[in-house]
Image (cartoon, rainbow, N blue to C red; front, side, top):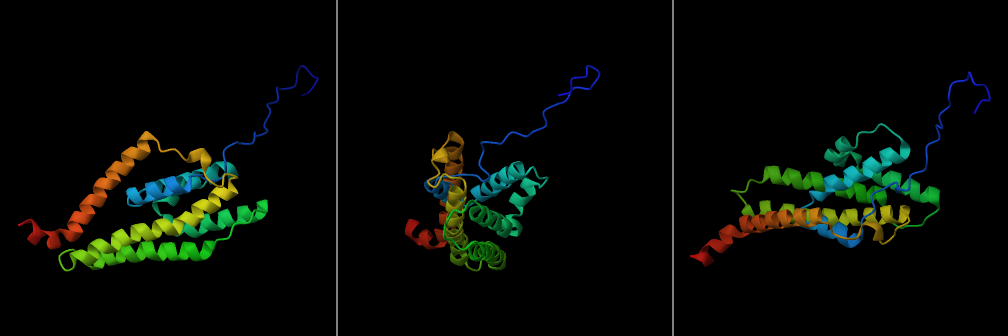
Amino acid sequence: MSDSIYAPPEADLTVPNSDQPRYYVVAPRKFLLLSLLTTTYYFYYWFYRNWRQIKEDDNDDLWAPARSIFFVFFTHALFTDVQENLKTQGRGYRWQPVLLATVFVLLVIGSNVVGFMVPYETSPLLSGLVPMTAVVLTTFLLLPAQKAINVASSDEKGDTNSNLTGANWAWMVVGGVIWLLMLVGTFADYLDPLLQ
């Protein structure tokens, strides 16, 4: 600060370090429950929260909602960012970020293509089982990424975000209804003779 009474006041422009981790920490159990029971709609929120926290940590102008909606285009970038962060910190975590991201993206795209190409009328079993299988596989493909994020955030078990909130329960109930409808729709033709 200047000693001159005529000098303009000076503001402290130093940015305090945030206590918030760079990534969205979630306990693996909670991640599995939310991903599976919301039929992977949780992925949109999960990608959004990770990109939003990266944006805040980097003081960047990236648009987290777009990266969440179009997550297939940004999965590799997120996983690479996590891997670079782990290397910078000198933390060892064994995972294959590029391979996981590639398989995840191909599975998401592939299941959507099959969903559009195989109409329910021609093969209800196939058109129902493909998305259900994709839900399970994509969830387990993202789990190592969540574990890597937790390690990079110094919270390996995700203890800071392990409890299920009321909103979590509400989304899981809605997802449970979706699962029930998917199962009934998939196996309705096979159950119909049994119900008559």
